[in-house]
Length: 320
Ligand code: ASP
Image 1: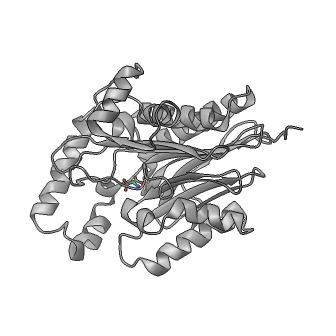
Image 2: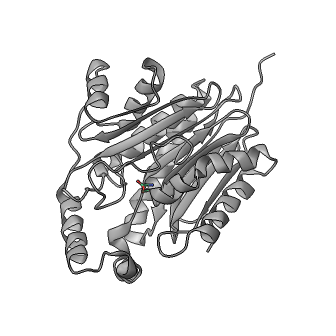
């Protein structure tokens, strides 16, 4: 007999510092994304459908470091990346080094469903987007170039090198907002999925790939445990295989909230300094959710059958 579950979705708009002026529209955006994903689930869509629709909506807002809002690399270029994972089949798809795909998360899904590969970047990925008629759209660079100029002058003045980074981040937190987007969901059939999308770390080197498209690091889903999407400094989530670590904790009996807290505590313990910025959201196969971060804020929202409207916040459990 097929299992029926009460669907749940959790979305995030990134770990970082969300000042009130910027957080207002972002909160509305994550609520819209949670609602869109939840309506997809309610009308019989799969967890994969839900996380892809929720993330695509956030990519289109321009208010996050993903899709049209993507940050610039050191060469003033956009290199977007995204991934999706289906907890039922353990199938996964990821794309990177994308310059003009409107919705990188949809390309990640194409790679998962239409290719034999998990991770395709650059020209090959953009060619797949062409073959499957995915929309193209150049990200809007105006605001991003202004941020880039300030970041670059900090770098040239020697303020961006590691020993000075802490002071620079404290003085100008707005320059280092991370704001990747992601979603995790449980559908009515008991399947979980996760998706994550980003422009990557501001001023990153060309060709740098972060955690967001790296399966197990920024995104993981497995029906034996649950699903997790990460945000924050990608190099940390990669080293600690963070999304999979959260799922392992769930598989070993932790609730999603305990699991994300344990993973953030691990980051705090093992990675020192200003770089230990992470934010995690998770759901398990019972529909329980979790959210925690070490950054000042995590913009996130969730919706379950028990909520008439999505619940959103710019903080979850903060662990320093
Ligand atoms: N995790 C992303 C990266 O390092 C950044 C973010 O979360 O905003 O590429």
